[in-house]
Length: 493
Ligand code: GLN
Image 1 (tube, rainbow, N blue to C red):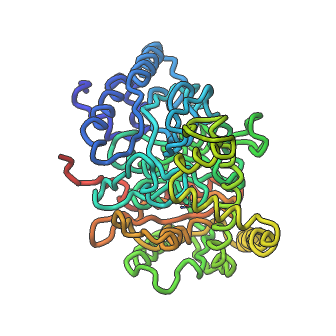
Image 2: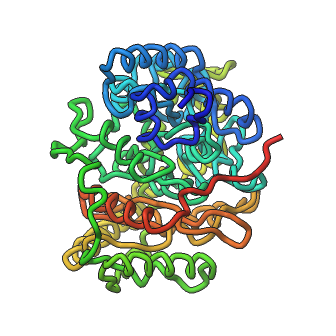
Image 3: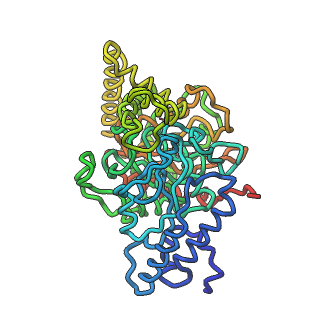
């Protein structure tokens, strides 16, 4: 095959590196093709906050040398990826979608970024996000909103909306996002891609700018399940720089991916099919569960009554941790310092007033309130108790099932500006947050489309450190269906 007959941006990561190995395309040609895609489409989509063109082409050239010598660094060598702008990149601005970090250039790489570099991956740039990862629509980015490649009038989800849109619009072969309360999985669902939040502690948070430290986790967004396994393989594992990273063996996630799921016990939580949920989503998800049953899985109802309170607990715990984490933006240590302060307190106030957007301020105020003396027990203390109940309930349910399945979101991608009421925005996370509260791995993958042609996501939740089973079930579903083959048909002008 001649090089110019292959469109490398249509290949899965696995097929892409096979093409490098056989010489049908190169990392340089592929990187150029993705950069061209960004030039052609990103003005409308807004997936990237910065594109590191020269560094990407240099990395691609180095990768081509390795492939030519028959000595690639592994299955990600030369693969063009996008990185959420909440992950530190040495010498490349890391804004977290915030004015307060607009000019922050980290002196070091996040561990996940370093691991991708070590694996030979090509980093195309940094992706747009809700400011400090707070939001579900990427409308809270201080710079510009990201638009959904399936329908530009709609949101891509959030907070990793830029990463999801970059993959969906063929502007990266894969991406990293972060998930504190759904921010990988919900945008994956809205954009029709695969998104995986690993077990809390599976992946290092070193160099991930903290939102809610007990919930934050980095994970991949890709077209297909096997690609997610490849990315997870590289970023997972103990990191001495992150004391909360788990010292657990990392299995080979590719091995056994195609094992049949016959006899596997799959739980369907009653509480994930709530009254008033979108009828199309319910029907689509139930059909997907039937597919898993046809593949030989044993479908069982399970009950997670406390997960109904998960959302309320999350929106106390996450802001509480955020209010503490964001105290460091004081105009001294990082980024912006507003001029004209009369004294240090005045300088702090002016800097934080100018540097943070409305949603971040709302979270800081809420978090400070629930942690304050006199209210701590009533709010934060109670929320922690709910969190324990949610975790125990999952543990009990996992005594009888291997994995759980349900909808990822209560609705498909909504219109820009549709959810101006913060509570309406928060409600979007109702099915996402329980897995974060319990620290469990969870994945979203495409399972169909609404009448309007918008993607619908199927959520799988697994046992602690059992990403392998999640990936295996997701892969079985993917093989049995062809949703993953669809691409947005929006014409970009
Ligand atoms: N949408 C949720 C929030 O706004 C989750 C965000 C996230 O996972 N980073 O907090």
